[in-house]
Structures are given as structure tokens and as C-alpha cells.
Length: 88
Image 1 (cartoon, one colour):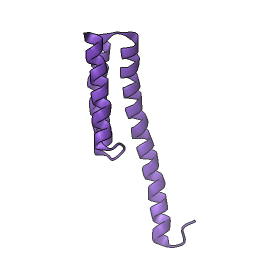
Image 2 (cartoon, one colour):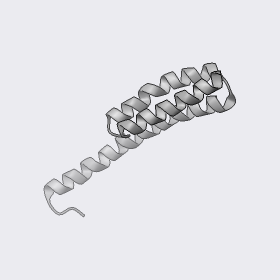
Image 3 (cartoon, rainbow, N blue to C red):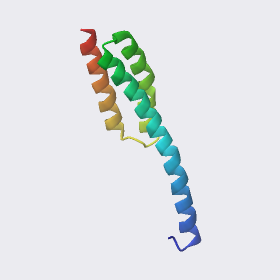
């Protein structure tokens, strides 16, 4: 347990931020799963719509520090590549 007053406050703030970050991470993963399920079903139109919705969520997660920016770019790129292969 933290001893100093500032360390106690930091522990409280870390706990609060962890809740916010978990919520953001979960939201992003939900959007990505929607894209993956649309790709698995073979529906290119719904997959494209789901990717259009997921892209800003992943980018927002990167901007907020939930993901590294390169991880976000790689995730979006791989989903887009799978969508392109499905359309072809």
C-alpha cells in the first residue's frame, strides 16, 4: 500500500484510469470483432461498413494510448487487406 499522500492519490487515479482504458479497449475490440465476423460470413458490403466504423475506433484507441500507433495501423491494414481479398 502507498504510504505518502501523493502516492495514495496516484494509486486512486491509476485505478480510475484503468477503468476508462478498459472500457475504451473493450469498445475497440467489439468494433474489430464485428469486422471479423462480417469477413467470416463473406458479406463484403457489411464488412466494408463495419470496417468504416472500426477504423476511427482503432485510431482513437491509438491516440488515447491504448494501442501503439503502429499496432493500430497494422490492425487496420490487415483488416482492409482481408476485405480487399473478399471483394476480389
